[in-house]
Figure 1: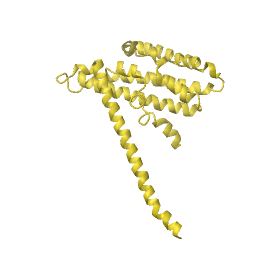
Figure 2: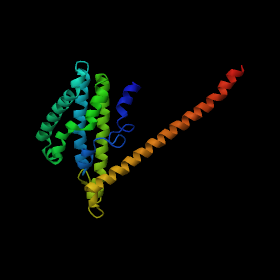
Figure 3: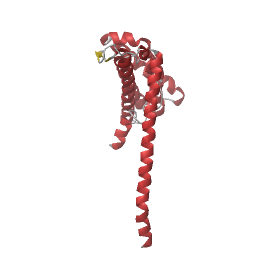
Figure 4: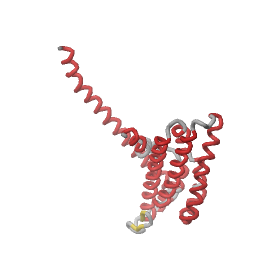
Amino acid sequence: MASKLSEFTKGIIKDNPTYVQVLGMCPTLATTTSAKNGFGMGIAATVVLVMSNVVISAIRKTVPDKIRIPIFITVIATFVTIVDLLMHAFTYELWKTLGLFIPLIVVNCIIMGRAEAYASKHGVVDSLLDGLGMGVGFTLSLTLLGSIRELLGNGTIFDVEIWGKAFNMFVMILPPGAYLTLGLLAALFAAISINNQERAKKKAQQEAQKAQPAQKAGESK
């Protein structure tokens, strides 16, 4: 059970696709002008990621190695088409805003990377959890980035006014704002990762020091 939970949670913090692995930068920078756009893009990518992971894992033993990449792309493109049509039908305004970036999910390196590196080598359940975890991590990353840019640029979050337009920095909803916010968040994640590694190292050293007296006592006997 713990290993299954680990498969899911690794994509949220430890191996976050945006701030740790620095993947999928094209939609990350282009679609996060607002929290709503970031969330919508993340959900669309998550649906494709989960479904393609499941299908690729299920057919992994029957796919010849030499043609696996074209088959993976076909599977991913199928689900992207389905998501694109559903968004066009039910969330037209969001679909129109995201535009070309929905079809470009086909070549998103997060989805292709998980298909090649994970789903093609693991079982269906593990691949589902991996896809869901990475998708949630990607969605949260885009939503966080979009929320910060929208708040600082427009004074709103999910179109809800927070402090109006008195202190807005319009640059935050432009490309320079995307790069600046992404860099700061990536630095924050790196600092958290380094801190966690140092804490784990200190804990291991303390446990080793505690074990030494007991080991010496056993040897003296």
